[in-house]
Image (cartoon, rainbow, N blue to C red; front, side, top):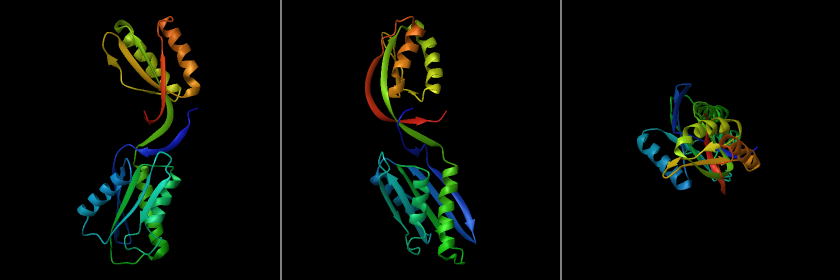
Length: 216
């Protein structure tokens, strides 16, 4: 099995709930760092300038080791931290959450606010597509154009069963395939490629990287 890292989300999501006449609109977005997260927050605040609160939470870094949150005027600890805890429990990183509250005239109390902000983020995440991240090793190899279609089918089936993912295929004098593979599956890939090509394929093992692996 490959080494797993905190996941992220594939694309931005917006989700709204209404609790005791207050509207809670959650904006989730994947980001590539704190500066990018701040940009998302600023854009939401521009769009929703008329809201009483735009509370925020973000987790960034490959290991999810950087985190920030803001209650944005709500009682201390009732918004940003509960939002952040949801992101932590879901084991996510490189994601920012902004929950915009339009006050409905009825106070919710500290416990009610914690539940409202937590639920807002949790429900938005339920609607998000996740992208897992794993430490994978790059393998490249060339095949004749006549064999490319068959090898492509073999690889697409292979990666589904070995926690691997395909990189781009390039076509020049030969078809060059790229596969990102867990280190403990390299020998299996070599053997399966040899069997599929009658020993004609000579895979070249490259570097290890943290790779986004989208769900099928």
